[in-house]
Length: 126
Image 1 (cartoon, rainbow, N blue to C red):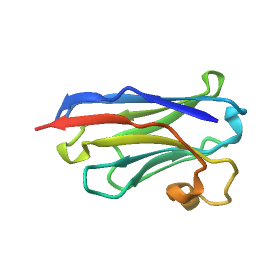
Image 2: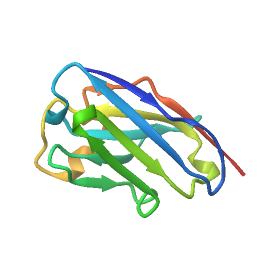
Image 3: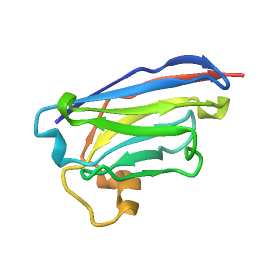
Image 4: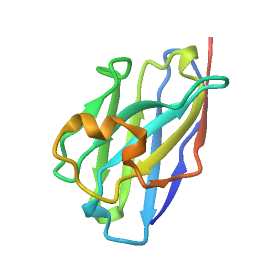
């Protein structure tokens, strides 16, 4: 599976961006997908995930402002980010899991994912 992330860029605080992650290779619908981010000097952190069944889970910091969605026909997962904050400046990575997990919490853990995209930079200025 290859993942290609796009949609990053520069935006002012309070603005919006939509990230896309296109998957090629194996059947897209069999994987849970997620977005993680890594700010300079910090560890990679979970942002949002969507399961094969369409259930979603979010980091507390993302709830109410970010929306993850997927289009199985296009083999693409999206992350709509609204009301962005300067502290959310980071490289955003999409990830895909090679198996299903029985609980949503598993989808928040980076070690559960087997495939990673190259990352797309999001810069939020104050």
